[in-house]
Length: 114
Image 1 (spheres, rainbow, N blue to C red):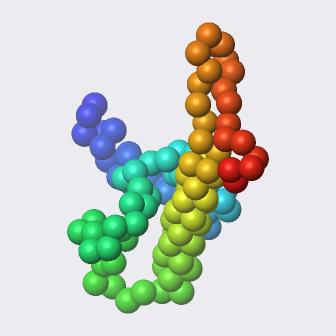
Image 2 (image 1 turned 180 degrees about the vertical axis):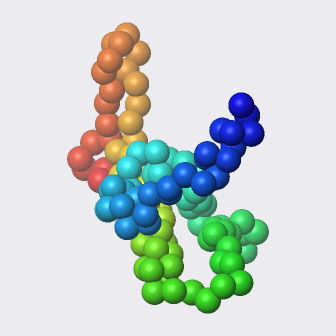
């Protein structure tokens, strides 16, 4: 039974890349934005040893659809990094603090300090 399932899975019709791409959102969602394994945290240290690894290319010739797919993935990763950096910057500028004694209340920095 296991062998049959493996054979069926291996020979099953895979969805086309165009269909998979059309179902992906154009802008990154929360799962991509806050996943430190896909998008680096953005600690702006000079000489950092960590780099963003892109998927390796096979030894085959790169087709036009492969090129477009790689560009789309890179665009999503770059936009996720920029959006997350902007969100972190805004939250840092707001300087949120929890008021003691109030369960769901927070205070932010004065507008004069911004």
